[in-house]
Image (cartoon, rainbow, N blue to C red):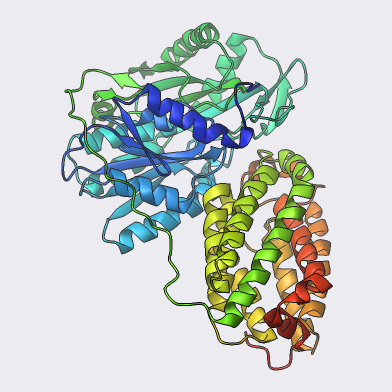
Length: 591
């Protein structure tokens, strides 16, 4: 387990700082990750990769000539926030456009997608290629739903080499898509990994058993099997991948045996020798293979096999030189160091003086955020345990990180007398930045949307609170694209919204409508135990999830109940705007 740290909450940032200190000839620290510390030719496409920390050499270890131009680095097993991706891409951009590439995980898709929209809006042409190599996470006819594991390396390497060769953004994107299409991976685990500060692994594999089809975020496998011999394991991995090969597969393959954290190199080499013999027996030629730790999962006991079926074009770029802290091939020309300007301060500023009513409501919003923080802290462990059943176990930790940051930002802005719009915007930005992952993107965006709906007005009525509820729920459904029955937070959110609207439009007070809605959310969250997940990391482990409620729905229900209880209490009546909103009935509410 991970034992070297001061504060587990600072582990990812401090590890990244140390990585940069040890590799200044390759990388420089920017807010959100790392970029090359050497010159990038003007007009060259910038390949920006990234994801959660805990996977070294992925992702920061792959930054350097012939590979990535930058890496956005999230917290442990959590997606980097949209702002982090944006800042890394801005610093890496050399004028030829940006290609974002990362594993197909919901949080990464949300955050990188938001960053792409912002970059394109600023005139930096940006594209995305998702890595979908894990054959265990979806059948072949749903290949677009597959997650990315060690196949990240093949896509990143060929895209990086194409960019280094001076190809256009169109061509770099095309080659990355082609490489992903021809890459397949399958992993096994012998035991789970342990997050810094945790006392137990995210999952255990029973003694004498092996878990097949694991993820790289601590997700357990999709099935368990008796522990095989090395020859049996090689046969299993090779046969499954060959059964799934692309239609246009040739007879030349790159084979990558990847250790996930604690399997020793001698064991990996032993297995690789047996894998090579099986590939040769299948009339395949193994080209420039890799065997070692390339995409890890902290201290997980496990490994994966990746096959990339080459053609002449892809083989050229796979063999091209690369020079990064963790991956070196051939010889690259020396590069001059470059000077990085200070990161631009992108924090939103208060552009107009807050009205007394808006500043008053901002103080209430900060107090509500403090209540949200308290309820998340109370239930952090149980939310993590619930998430570990079919996910990576970080929901409680991620929610805690996000709400801690949001509450602090809200308190700071409220103390400065800013508007409720600014209080909630700052809180939402902080939540997204600090939490990462899917929940960070959704909660951060939704809190900001509620703030924008409330604005900076001279007076407020209960209808404005109703508009904020609508804005909050719309932001989550529009961004996350989840639908009722997918077993996500939406399964509690929509019953909350509908119950609130029915009660409020029926004449109930704001606090009465919120209390009714919170009860509906909690009941709906409990009912998610009967659902199979259709989105997110739990989807490949649907059977394990069955019988247990969705952690996102549960946390939403807990928060909704605490907010309703607080707003109905005497403590919430201390501000004039709050008192007026809470006592106003729903007749004439705005939507």
